[in-house]
Amino acid sequence: MSDAYVVGDPDGLSPLLVALRDTIARELHAQLALRGERIELADLPEVSYQVTVQVERALHAWRPGDDPQ
Image: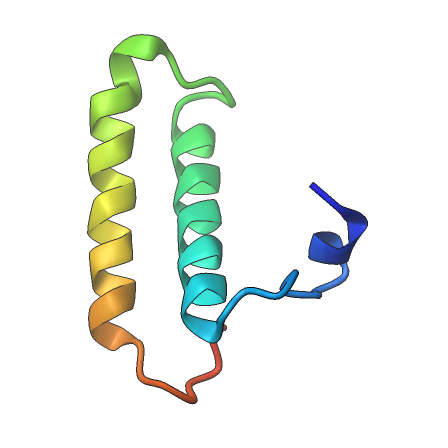
């Protein structure tokens, strides 16, 4: 991952993809915090489900022109 991501450059992603990337990152961060900074292989189905739920919410809430934050 480039330093551009860290400083806020969306790396040429559309606003929707930026919103989805941020949603996924937030959920993965939350899942890691819940699981002691480690995701076990057996936990992947639940983690994937939770990420999918958050992506679905982001897609329903997103409107063109919205700030992805």
